[in-house]
Length: 464
Image (cartoon, rainbow, N blue to C red; front, side, top):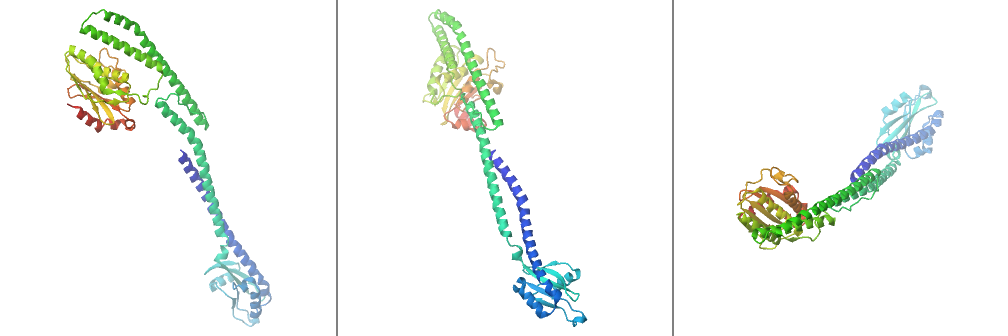
């Protein structure tokens, strides 16, 4: 916008300068020529009295020599042939003549002053009546340098003024552009900060009226976003708190189940559910930004081993074959431990909820250098519409499903700059691929590229 304003002012100023400076320069040039011709006319008129008195060659030569133009060799007098009473004298030309004879005769016949082009300049031909009744022609030579005297200086001054006007207009436009651009930049920066989760971003209400209005609207929007998030956190905390009563009853009932593997698994599941509810309440009350805190992270391999220890017992009861690979080495990811555990539980819970008992599944972890890829595969029937399954709250035809499990996984992945993809696994069922980026490179890569050949190559390496 700044450079556009500068270009517009530059174009307008150049057009104005050309529209005024060029005609003004031509007028100055014409005025210089008229001035030179007017001076030549005065010099020609100086010899007129002498021609009206006498046509004697000697007297005319002395008269010509006494004038300024005659002394400079720039005056000539063309006397016509005299009548018989004057001795039938032939025509004569006194002084240095440069004009053609035809031009001289045309001027004598017309009886008006004329200008003829001659080598090196122009010649003023001025007719003068002599005493015998004839017409003499006085020729005054006007050099080209005299006709253009002062024109070059005038053009130079006009050019300097034009350049000064152009630079002045560019400087003024640049300052105006800065005055307009700075509030716009602040507005864009605040919008970016708000999009990154910094909810305290606000814009100073200054600058032009339009940008002030935009800043006021942005600040009002940001306040409303903060209020909406506050309300959402309070609602999540309140709803989660209401679960404590049925959880307490469930925990008491589980305690009365006695001893045995099923009873122990039930009590452990109730305790895990209670911990998750407490985590939800604390998280909702923290009022933290949506983006991950710098330095927050965990060992994905350790979290997966721990959660698989819980789910393997249930898989054994249902006769499911479980395969776990890639968790032997540490794999640090920029995801808090509770969130990664919740995402993994959501994926494994979908396997148990939407596949028949006895269906095998596998969990693979791969370190790709700039990302950690977690693959959860099963041998079930697969998902008919993967894109619809990834949409928040879309349960499709799945009974008892809220449609939020995969959305939890997606939000965890996208918080690192990664993504989630659904596809066909090597076991024949569904494969959930979670890409967890390890640095900002994943955030800068467009999603279309992340989902391209690079993801396909990782998927091929993930196959046993």
